[in-house]
Length: 144
Image (cartoon, rainbow, N blue to C red; front, side):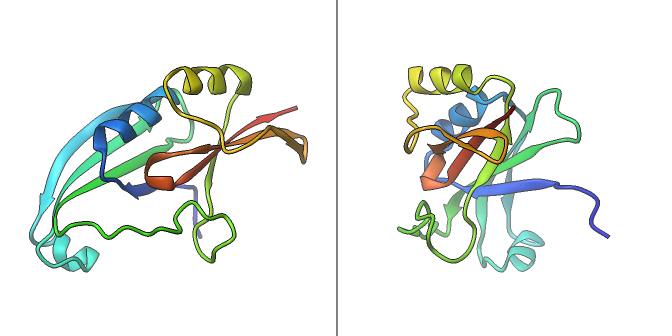
C-alpha cells in the first residue's frame, strides 16, 4: 500500500532560476550532489549520465514535501515543447496548499514569476496557476 507522496523531480536547464522559484515558495536546499555513471545510468536508463541533483524540502511541512531538481551536464536534456500544455496526455501540474494565496502570488510577481491567468474559486478553494521552471505548471490553492 502506498503511504504518502515522496518527491517530484523536475529536469531543468536553469538550475539557479528553479532554485529561486521554489525558494520563494518556502523550499530549502538540503542536498546538492552530482550523480554520474553507475548505478545511476542503469537505474535511470540514461547512458553516460552526469547531472546535478538538488533536493529541496518545504520547511515545516508534514509529511515531508520534497522537490528534486536535475540539471544534466551529459547527455544534454531533451526539451518537450508541450510541457506546460494542460490539455496534453501525461503529467499535468503539481499543486501546493497555502494559507495566504494573495501574499504568495504578490511575492512571486515581485520576483519576476507570473500567473497563467486569473484566480478561480472551485471546490472550496481559491486556485491559481504559475508558470514554473521549464514550463512545469505549479498551482497554488487556499482552502476556504
